[in-house]
Length: 392
Image 1 (cartoon, one colour):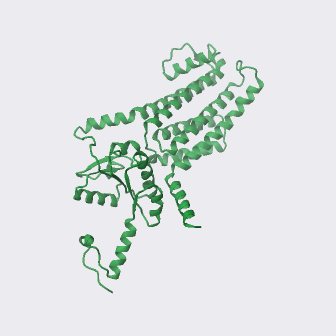
Image 2 (cartoon, one colour):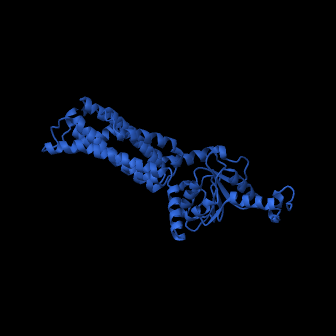
Image 3 (cartoon, rainbow, N blue to C red):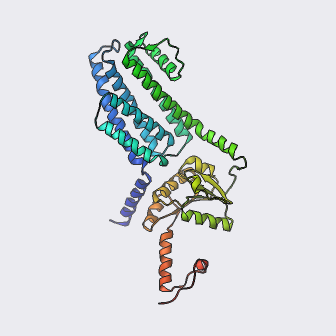
């Protein structure tokens, strides 16, 4: 294998590392959605082959179950696309859809591969919830519109197929849409009432899923704005970021903390992004932002458009690679310095669009070897040494 082939293989490994854990979760979610689509299509298509029209349906519960699975399967596949971008709204929507899909399969006593994958995926999503914190206005808008459209389709198709289970009977799509809107808005005029057990369970599922989707949409659309208002209310003295040509430091480990102290000592203007309040260095003179360094909104708040350099100093090489990719997407002209945990990771981070990669472990090991051999150390590091090297 020549150098170009090795570089290409290393680039593939870096991109795969940057897709962890959202890549496998998104693929699994898409597979679950596809299984639900294939399983749900059996019943409606088989019934349509035996009927000349959609009126006078028999076995309405079976039709509802198949239609629900098809619609939920399509939504699961769409949510999987959002997981690839680590979107928080896609994570919330995925959890809601999986809970509903598990409930439908359990109610229909479908103890198959799809149900097992759904349960396992729910657990995996919950354990990896801290990785899905990205919020983008366009993605949130698209997912919000698609989710609202999907829940409306679910209500219209389900109430139309179960028309004989309502009083008065639902015979046309306009009435089905009216019932769906009235149910989701929780107005409850009472002019159309579910009377059969199947229709009542459908109305319950429509309310549960609909309210969950609308709550997710509201949280996705208004959540950042509400958070900013609360932050302004409880921290009135905090000023907005007006820095230009500054450095953005991402990380809260030992290297990031020491880098922050050194930049502060030298008077370099910088903004420090930490993941939580526990990692917030108290008494710091520089500005600190709590959030995920891979989140577009967090980097924008830190002034990524006006920054001259971003230092990705997280303790995980995969997270530093993802920070590099996101930062370069937001500002292609910004310089990206990535911290590598080992010498092997230097080349991989370079392939992740980092302009400069630094490995403290590799540098420290060489300094230690020089001390062992009694070699002279650069005067810039003399204040960090106690004693002097001695020739063996």
